[in-house]
Length: 181
Image 1 (cartoon, rainbow, N blue to C red):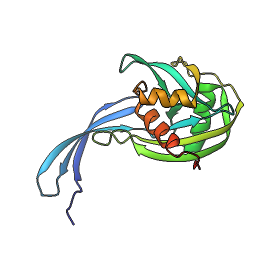
Image 2: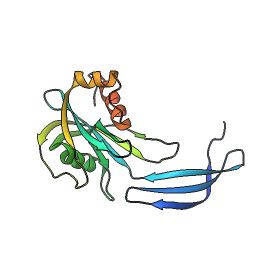
Image 3: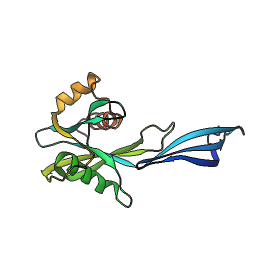
């Protein structure tokens, strides 16, 4: 079997912020050479595909400063220290949509960009929605966009959805047909 593992020899923190840390590590490659790796340490996050009883998927529109665009996304957010991922999914769904799901089923998990970042995103399917409004975070302005399933499929086909977690989650969910968990 071919060895692929890289072992960390030492590292230094270059930046520590509110939601991420940037570090540079010196690693030993499988063939014995050394290399530098820049890594973004990022908190685990969740995303929720929430579908109401009318067959609409609850998307949210918000401005994303890093890319300078308004994006349509699934409700999502960071897991707080000591918080369970399912609790986070419920909290974020309430904060961003004003609804909670009686049923929150795991859809899968993935790394957003493992070439340089360790962020893992856990996806859920939220069903049997009920109103449960909560205040939005002070630094967020979010517009709820209930979108019919067929319209979501059209947006996917036309490349109008650009957020990675949203693409993964919707393809995962819609690709299951009637075989959802």
